[in-house]
Amino acid sequence: MKTSIITGGAGFLGSHLADRLLGEGHRVIAIDNLITGNPRNIEHLSGEAHFDFVEQDVTEEIRIPGSVDHVYHMASPASPIDYLQIPIQTLKVGALGTHNALGLAKLKGAVMLLASTSEVYGDPLVHPQTEDYWGNVNPVGPRGCYDEAKRFAEAIAMAYHRHHGVQTRIVRIFNTYGPRMRLDDGRVVPAFIGQALEGRDLTVFGDGSQTRSFCYVADLIDGIFRLSQSDEVMPVNIGNPDEMTILQFAEQILKRMPCESEIVHKPLPEDDPKVRRPDISRARDLLDWQPEVSFDEGITQTIEFFREDREK
Image (cartoon, rainbow, N blue to C red; front, side, top):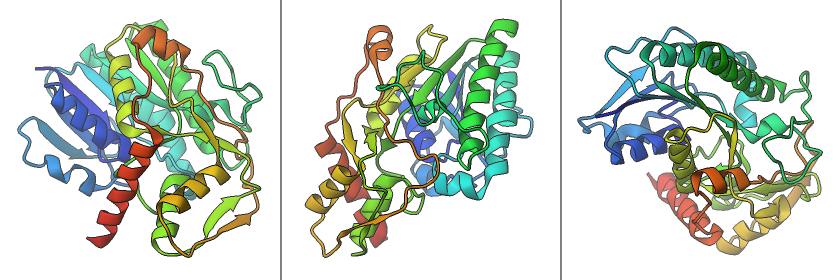
């Protein structure tokens, strides 16, 4: 039985990855300090014989007895409302946490997959974004704590690969949504759904012409798993290339959630990306991967999750 470590294992993506790996027959050890993770995300796994949870900050040394086959470094705040409130912790988990995850992989002879982000492209001047684009990032802006933490994480992962021979994989995750997101995490999908559920107006920043590409969580996890099982060392974009404006997305939410809410506009935050769309040619070619879940199906399941969660 393969053993997989997931840092950030109680988070939105980490918990879904745990489900997938258990389904693939792995033993899974989830590590999380619960700053942004939620024990409820993994409570359904409490009776699983091959699942263990360790509450720990991965900026401290990670000690796991026995053999380890894969280390999935998913730990990090991932929404602006979080990393703007805890910028130091965000930088530390990107730097020290990645260093410790790589050290564990080196010690165990394991494959280490780094969960990077489309934010390494910053406010891109190239559209759609390909993996060979170096980005347009403001290192001293309010989003720099997250963007530069991930850019450093990619750099140290490649250094460990080149200098120590660690088998590293880098996934650049584009906007992902689905069950187990926090309503209050500040990202646009839970923000709009939460506002509609409460009958509040939907807040669109700027004129709403900025674009995002929304990938359902099951598709993203499938791409991550395929990448982890491949031999590809260079970064791979995983996301949905179907692009829509934020205003269009708000209108879609109101269409699916009839209420008295209206759309209101507020100033665009500093360094907010104007466009975001992945070129997934590399994922298609190397992993035979592309998203399968339609927006209609994914957003319906997500809205239903938040409705049920709100009633608990």
